[in-house]
Structures are given as C-alpha cells and as structure tokens.
Length: 125
Image (cartoon, rainbow, N blue to C red; front, top):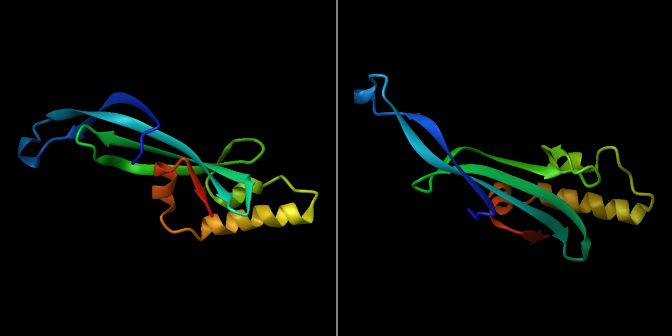
C-alpha cells in the first residue's frame, strides 16, 4: 500500500503459546494514511475525497483492519459511506445534482475500493 503519511509507535503483541508466561513482545509499527479523490472523466471538476488509514508492522504486514472513509463534500467530516457525502446538501441545478449522484453510484459499484483508497492519489470513473 502506498505511504502518504507515516508515524512510528509500539504496540504489544502476544508471544507464542509456549512462551505465554506473561511475556509480551513489543512490535514496532508504522501508521499510514492516504487521502485521495474520485472523479468523473466526463466532469473532472466533480470530486469526492476518501481516506485510508492502516498500520504495518516492521515486516510490512498490515495489522488490524484498514480504516477507509469518505469526506463530506461541504463540511469535510467523516462519512462511512459515499452516499453520506451528499447528506444535508442539495444542488440547485438538476444536471449538477445528477452528476453528483452518478459519481456516488460509480464509486459504490467500483470493485477493490479499499485498495484504491489506500494506493491512489486520484481515480477516474
């Protein structure tokens, strides 16, 4: 996965079962964050931003679940689904509203979203 921002920390991990005598290993990890945006090829000025965050151990293995989310188009707040990006907002122009809805629908239909959000700077649909 592509690395945009990183920070290093330590998390405890459980040792092998044979060594379970309260011994806890400490494993270095790196936090990664990638912010990117989706756009329509036919209307590149319409964009929806997304963020991917994950931790990698010193071996480069992803630990814990990858956290992906979208950013609201006006407030910039976290949205757990792409449809939430338009909540509380409406476009006065019907054509523009249709374009936003098309962008959301294409994002929802895209395979491999988690990987795209974590690896790409932008992604045209």
